[in-house]
Amino acid sequence: MDFGKAVSFTFDDPDWIKKVAIGGVVTLVPILNFASYGYSIEVTRRVIDGNPQPLPEWDDFGGKFIKGLIYFVIGLVYSLPIVLIACLAVGGMAATGSLAASSSRSAGEAAGGVFGLLGMCVSCIAVIYGVFVAIVLPAAVGQYAAKDEIGAAFRFADVLSLVQKNLGAYLMVFAIGIVAGLLASFIGSLACGIGLIFAGFWSLLVIGHATGQAYREASANIGLV
Image 1 (cartoon, helix red, strand yellow):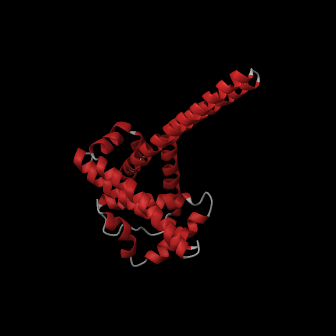
Image 2: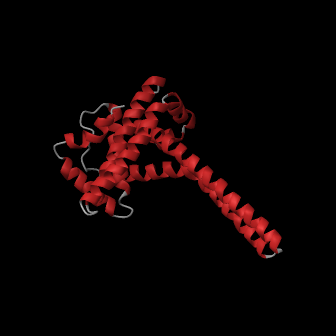
Image 3: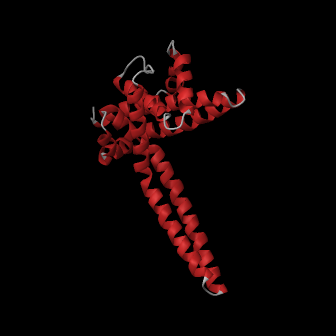
């Protein structure tokens, strides 16, 4: 994994200002901003292919929009377990609260204790699973970018194998994502918040490049490409 390349590759393109400016504007438009994620997918694909110019043109906007929408679907599916757990927890809390309201004071206090414990458990599970998704999702996105089919992202055995046998690479993607986000926030603050729009898009490109690097390295190690 080349951390420096993931951070700096954008600026190697002679048209990077134009491309980042367009991307920043696109991210401002609800729904249409899916295209910015599709653009990141194309960066990932180019890195996997070893393209010396990973930053694509802003052509085929519809194709980028579809890829971004698929990116969202992949993230949603991988996040479903915690969504279901949260729904069950809310239902259980509602039932506990209803029971407490119709019971004695001691029963209400006991129900309140159960309510608090349940909330703590759900919060802990959410944090743990959130970290898990943050590490695994780039492997799923890399699968989709490499194969250009949504089903590849849900070949869970392949995705987990990528992560399990190349954990260091995907931990690096996780770390790079955090660093890129912090840098984007810092750059945005220097420009009175206006720069955050474009720096945020840049951070998405950084993650896309790191995701491509990780997939290329990991898939070669386990013979997927």
